[in-house]
Length: 237
Image (cartoon, rainbow, N blue to C red; front, top):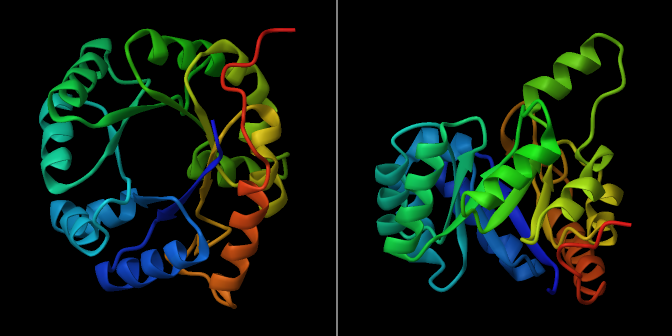
C-alpha cells in the first residue's frame, strides 16, 4: 500500500478549517480529517462544508464513537464523510453497529485503541470486529499529564511495530509524534500518516500553526510519498 498523508483539522472555526484544508491539498496531503474539536464546534455542518468544498477527497470524521454507533456513522456518512472512528473501549455491540453502518452507507471504519490496557490486543479485537483500519493512539491528556509529572511522555511508536504485526489491516499512529517520527511511520509498516498537533496545529490554541506551513507540508508529503509501497501486516519475526 502506498503511504497516505492525512491532515487532522483539529480547529474550531470552519472557515479556518477550509483554508487549512485547501492549503494542505495543494501541498500534497491525501486525506482530510474533521478533527474532534471541529466536529464539536461545527457538527454535521462542518463535514458538509468540507465535502462541498472538496468533492472526491476522503474525509475522516473523528467521532470517537462510544455509543449510538449506527446513527452516528449514518449521519456522518450522509454528511459526506468517507471514514468514521469508533473507540476500542466502546461496547462490542457499538463497534459492530458502526461496522454495519459502514457497510450500509459505504464508509470505512477506523478503530481507535486509545487507553486500552493492552494496546496490541485492543487493535486485534477491533480488526476481529470488522474495522477496516486501526488507529494506534496515545491520547492528548495522557501525554501531557505524564509529562507534567516529569516522566517520559509515551509515544505510539513504543508499540507500533507490535500493533502492525498483530493485524492485517492498515495502521495509523497518532499522538504527539514529532515531524521526524511521523515521516518514519512507513518504516514500521504503518502506511497512514496523520499530521496534526503539534506538527500543523497549535495544540493549546487549536489554531493553525505559524510559519510557512504550506512549504513545510509539501516537504513532509514529498518525503512520505517517496517511501514507496508499505507492506501491511508485517509477519511476526
